[in-house]
Length: 128
Image (cartoon, rainbow, N blue to C red):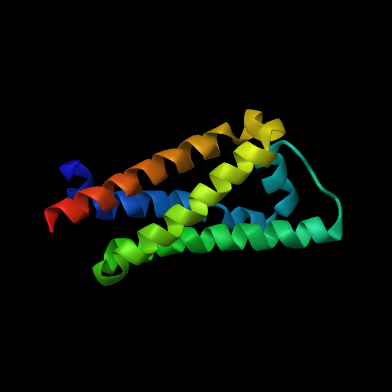
């Protein structure tokens, strides 16, 4: 686990950049929905909600990047993003089983990020 502690900056940077790709939903919400969920919503409200969701996820990615470089806020960023990703994972597994076929890569990535960030929290507490 010390490898995670030693490389957390790069892990957070990579996870943050990948997470920031949801900004695509702000620019093109219909394609984002189609790519991630295999579904398309034509209602104006769905358009707004998808853009907002994409932006909020983008902010979580930016928070990971911020925490990678600003160590004083690193733990706050890790916990905040971890809770956000955990919430998305649980909500997807509870309400989004119809979308698992197209969403599995995102769920796998978020699960790995949650696991690694959790291991970092545990490992960094042991080192203190």
